[in-house]
Image 1 (tube, rainbow, N blue to C red):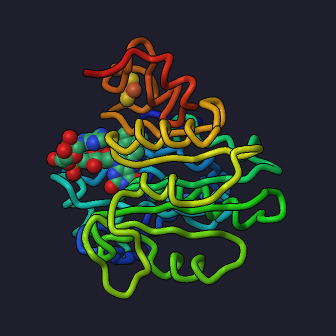
Image 2: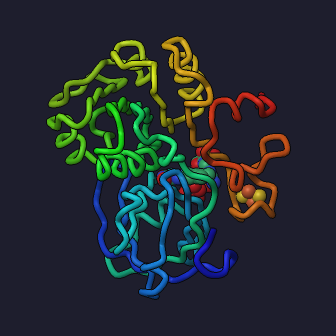
Length: 277
Ligand SMILES: Cc1cc2nc3c(=O)[nH]c(=O)nc-3n(C[C@H](O)[C@H](O)[C@H](O)COP(=O)(O)OP(=O)(O)OC[C@H]3O[C@@H](n4cnc5c(N)ncnc54)[C@H](O)[C@@H]3O)c2cc1C
Ligand code: FES
């Protein structure tokens, strides 16, 4: 749950801005109150509500490792009013932060298992946090796979980390881009194609997914076909959210509030929810 009052944004400072792609930036954030920063703990997949003063508040996943405690990162794609206003902010500017909220990926249940991380576009932010956590505690997990896709290689997030992970023996990295991409060894097509093309064991394997809704059903179906059961597949359902604490009714699917019961659900839990038209 939150660190202080779940309805009151706490002031936090932008300490660094990294340009990830033409429309996405990563902001390193530190609470002004050092005591709050010290207590900040989250599971990957959890989100914070970010106030961009004068523009509004929006939910954003935490993209840094859960083991990084001196600051945390938010990776934001410029898609509209609030995200665009956030993109104008610089090092030293203030934002408001509530949270972290929701349920994250259950990393403790992944111990001793192989983990397949599947990310599409900006969905790399929350699963990227999970992946950083897995790599930091590498000895506790089996084989690691990252399958990541975007519209073009130019849109890839965390490019420096991607290059490093591609060269590492600790993880198998497969990339996909819808458009032909120079300088990157990429599958020309969808990230979900990589599920079929990549060899990984079904036994003792879990999957961590985040991406656009259209990717999710296909990814689950392909993982099922490979023998991975619904209870071992975890997805972040990033619905429209407002309060983040189960009060406003903006985020429900049927009777479930995604800000509280989600955003991370197993495919088994997801299939039990009423389908959206
Ligand atoms: C749990 C969760 C985690 C998220 N994590 C990230 C993240 O790590 N990085 C990131 O860039 N974005 C993330 N988002 C999406 C982000 O909240 C929206 O892009 C943002 O609220 C858009 O606000 P805006 O005023 O800039 O755009 P608007 O002008 O309001 O809308 C622009 C577009 O964004 C969509 N949108 C608007 N509000 C939301 C919303 N609350 N959730 C989803 N889509 C929305 C609209 O349908 C529209 O297509 C997350 C959303 C949720 C629910
Ligand atoms: S965001 Fe308000 S109930 Fe979920």
